[in-house]
Length: 194
Image (cartoon, rainbow, N blue to C red; front, side, top):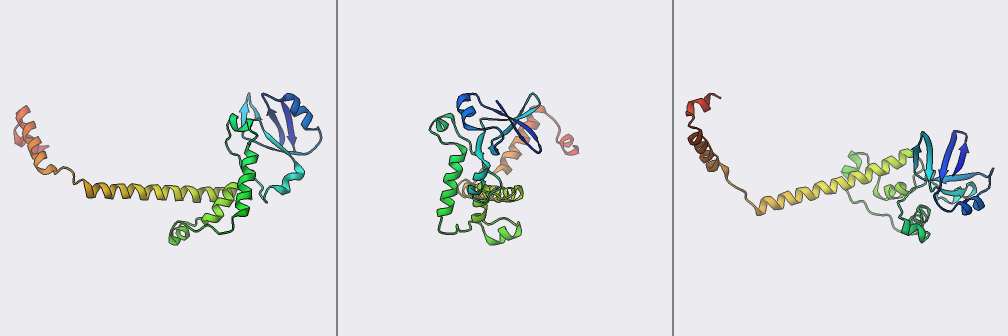
């Protein structure tokens, strides 16, 4: 366990394994940047198994103020594939992308709902400059996903309506009412009053 401190306060960093490696890798008084999912335990904010890098490496992070966190399993971590590794792979892939990704939604929808362009949204979801950019990219990608889910549901409905005509209920309902009246021997006048 270690204390991480800046101008805003103190944060507990927690590791369950590798204590010797941690004490040998980091020096007190040196500026570091910590990445991880914050949690609260006994009223104290902590990050379990944080990723730590030297502050002078900040320039290497693709001009992004925020660092994406990707879920990894213990198996991946044992193969030295961490959230930082995935982030670097995605960053390299986006740098090598020579074409601009085409828009998949109609332009009038993108304009009407003031959505971020797809190409920009895919970059900003991984490397946002600020929380507002991250939220706009997330909104764009969620909107698109739900839009295409709705289109698919409408397609299934149209196909179902073409293939299955369904049951014609007019005669069936008349027969049901007659059956109910017969069973309970209720006069028809009583049913009409209600």
